[in-house]
Image (cartoon, rainbow, N blue to C red; front, side, top):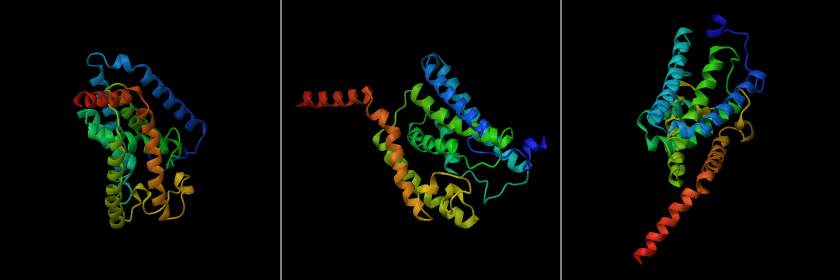
Length: 251
C-alpha cells in the first residue's frame, strides 16, 4: 500500500515507456468513443448526466490529490497549491460542466486542451505506473480534454475569435498573479521561475526569462491551430452568409 500511495516507490516514470504509451493509446480511444457517442449522449437527460460524470471525475481527482498531499505530509504552499495551468483549467472545467458556462468554456477550450496535451506528451511527473500519482495525473489531464470536447460535440459549444483574445488576456493576468505568489512562497508554479527538471517544450524556447516571451508566441500559434477547425467549418460560413443576407435586405 505504501509503495502505491506513499512518496517512496520504485515505480519511477519514464517518458514513452510501455505504460505511458498505453495511457496515450487509451486516451485516443476515449476521444474516438466520445465522438462516436455524441448523438446518443444528446438524447434526453444523458447530456446532463454526462456532464455530471465528467465533473465528478475532475472533483475526485483533485480531492484525491490533496488527500495524498496530506496523507504523506507534503502539503506546502510552495509546491502544492492548485496554481499550475492544468489545475486552473481543471477548476474551470468543473464550473463549465456544472453550470454550462460559456465564458469558462471559451478559456478552457484553449488553455485546457493546450496545457493538458503538453502535460500528456511531456509529463512533469516522477511517479510511474502503478503508483497513485501516475493514475491521478493522467486521469485528471485526460478528463480536462474530454470535458472540453464534450461541450463541443455534445453540448454544441464553439469557441470564437474573441475567445483567443480572452484566453490570452486571462493567461497574462494569471501570469502576474502566479509570479507574485511564486515570489512570496518560493514556488515555481506554471514554471514561471525556472524550467521543469523533466524534458518539456520549454527546453527549446531559450533560457530564463526569455522562454516566457517565446511561450506567448507558442500559445498564440497553438490557439490559432485549435480554432482552425471552427474557422473553416460550414456552420461559421453559414453564419457569415446569414449576416450578409440581413445586411443586403437592410439596404
